[in-house]
Image 1 (cartoon, rainbow, N blue to C red):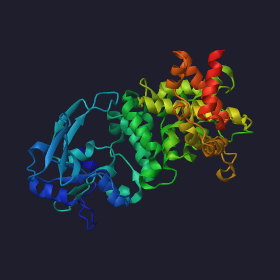
Image 2: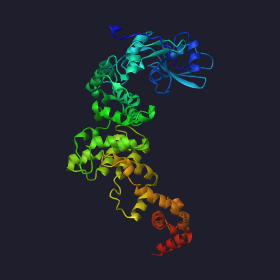
Image 3: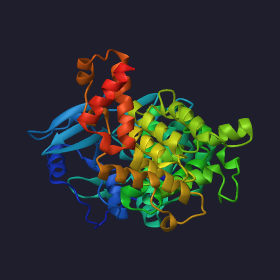
Image 4: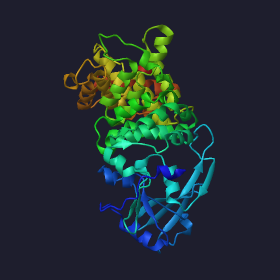
Length: 458
């Protein structure tokens, strides 16, 4: 019954780089060892280097490995091991068969090891990842037609219903790999992805987070222009957004004032991500996440940035995508402040205090604001002037403005010696800091000590 999936066995003259360490492992193993997955796909597709993954008909501990090779079992159930040799680390998996319970929860319900390469090929996600190169002889085996799909630049599953019904994470992998490589997606594979979109809900937040991070940097992987934008569009097309960033699920239905925006909320969001530097793309994805909430509740988007900060903490936090707390708080702060000084009318004194309070955010905040403007479709990148926050920040640096309380020419110990106690010490330092941010020359010890004495007498 499975014979219909096997397209051809290829013996090719193509020179696929096999690390010397892998050749030595294969020469000693006593059984064929194969390169498989992304390293083979990339070699045929000219996409550049990636990690070398290995597989074979035996479990790793049964291989006859050369002296100096070390094996660390990563997952006993799947047989996954890390083989370390000659300074390299190689993930190794034995050929296996998998059965999954309904729901696509990523973890197989039943595992059976096999010596059949053909059976192993059928359990893999896409044909382009199912090409096997014998590490000792260089012989290439391509049981499901992956080489032909690489030549056509098509991402295809030989059994798409099984692929996505089995493992919901493969839905995001489809979008991510298609974006990274620039490959088209086979029609049957795309239709199956849409059919089984709901299976993504059973995937853990951490796994979805990791795939989302890769999509947001997809253009960097192999240099495919705007790959991160295409990846997000594919997530939307396949109906996956409700299971990744739920508050954006209906953002495409929310219009924006055509005087300021050419796109609905979702497309504007994606185009902001498209325009953003990699380090702020997660914040760009979240920056208008409060708009659907505000629009549906109030009929307008006023205050969406503050609502967005709260929603960001929920979506990126422990309930959903489980980003580290530091990342969650930084992204939420960028979301909450991305509308600051939008009209350019904030007085410089107020800007200075804002910059001092958010000093480590200023560059990222300015970049998010820049991308947000480009994402409106109303202004070109070259027409955007320097951000006022950056200009004033640079001015403050030139003036030697104190950036933290420790930069003041007076300390808590000075105040304690003077007679200040408890909360009054912190209050005085905070007030003196504000004074020096606004008027930098006041940060001298004589003035600060006199200021503190006067305050103490009141």
